[in-house]
Image (cartoon, rainbow, N blue to C red):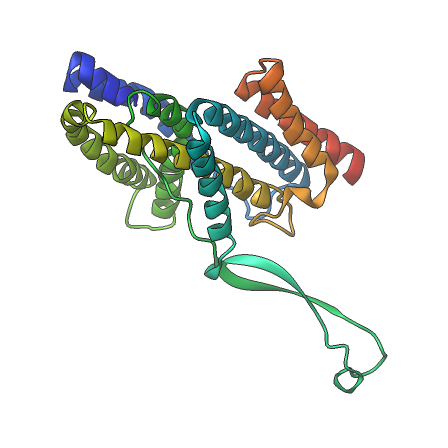
Length: 300
């Protein structure tokens, strides 16, 4: 969005400069994080898991707040309200469909038929890891001049920025595990790969949009797309909630509903941002503090 605004008002060079000013600091910080992660053990100390879970729980509250605020901007009638609902529910239902790939922990009860039980008349529980995949969230970039600006701004903050940083982070780690490629090269490749398609698309779309926005049917369609995109933010809330809890036994993530305290952390960040103007970074840091409090009370 920042790139498009600067291209429209000041030209391509200004847009590209604003893009680098916006993206490079976070990308460099993420690259540094990847270097640190590459040099630590696979299993973190127990307090770190509590800290990260608290940060995750607070983030869920912030994303939920963004979803509510976006809904207030995008919903203008019953139709857009229905589209927000369908976007969120359809995305959540799709995330429940799994196929081989990402580990998901399931509990299987042993047979209760007496002929199938050996030894004592008892029931055993076997916890097994099965390789499954959750389909990725669908990124939707919207360019409605009247409604889409606010949607894109929050969507970038809550979703796309995370994906961008993840690209640099994973690119660096992938290169670090290979002796043929420096970690910095992997980070640069990830950075270029995640940004270039979007920049090319937006640059080409700017000129086209100046013509298309004059047609009423185009703006009406984009208004509906905006509402559906807002629904996907609610899907992100659900997804983050389901993988927010981590510890030694659940390093791939488990539901934050495992302990009521994480509900309190999520609610605190939501209420703080909604009614007490608590900035999102402060709310997330507060979540980390609350995670450490939980560890001190429950685990020690």
